[in-house]
Amino acid sequence: MFDGFELTRCEGDDGVGLRVRHGGSGPAVLLLHGHPRTHATWHRVAPLLAAAGHTVACPDLRGYGRSDKPATDPEHRPYSKRAMAGDCLAVMRRLGHERFTVVGHDRGAYVATRLALDHPGAVSAVSVLDAVPIGEALRRCDAGFAASWWHWFFLGQTDKPAERVINADPDAWYTATAEQMGAEAYEDYRHAIHDPATVHAMCEDYRAGLGVDREHDDADRRSGRRIGSPLQVLWATRDDMTDLYGDVLGVWRDWAVDRLEGGPIDSGHHMAEEAPEALAGRPEAGRGTGRIGSAPRPHTLRRALRSTPATTWPKRHRKHSPPHCARSGRTPDT
Image (cartoon, rainbow, N blue to C red):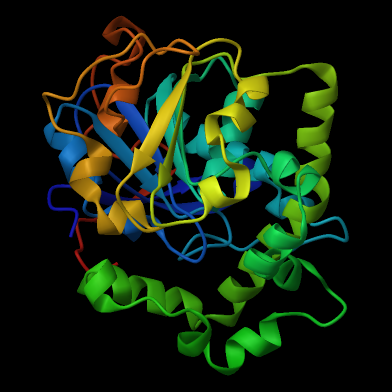
């Protein structure tokens, strides 16, 4: 798993330590996982992007996997997407990347969105997978959303905390399989879901989502603050994005300054595990104008990576762990 990649531990925002896998050489791309996965969910995609000429960094988000789990507060701000975005920016700077593409899936998509909004100078392009902004999801929430996405509200409430239910039988609650994920990624995921501290931190992520994250999104919407870098939105054909929103790109139009494109991937929700080649893209994948309203063409991560001139990227990947990143070696089982 992740052959040729290095495993490090980097200091994020406010001294929070993140486990990070990175490798490759060339323009940098940051891959952000969703719930309840770890960075290992990208083990089939990251090598494809590295082979195509990119430096790839995959962290465990704060609270997830083997990254630190800071103490929370009554407003759950330590688990806000703003805090997680700050971690990601700090990690990429410590790895030597001033500008980079960010790709986020599921909860990681909210972090990618916040990173692009809060730190536009660092983000060259954004790709979000199976998500609309948190504020949009909650603003549009109806009975259908509540029935399908009830876990948002169960994990996010505190009157009867979800941790007790999940910790009673994590494998019954989270139903991924080794066949779906790959044996090593599955073991990494199982280590996470059987750790009560990780389960608590993941619930804190959802609690922040219903409160402070929505506040941040709503404030941006009121002020007209939008994503200035090229924005790509991809969704799985066998998930419920079109059922919930119909025109998925239409939901995102108010969030993009100009360059918005996207389309479906033939996959279930966990695209990186189920359809890695279709997601990453092949070298012959077509280029598009990336303009709102442009004619549909094949959409892949590689297309998003091509949307920014190469001259905006760092010249090379740093092969040795920089200060504040403790080298852990190329161990395949962590």
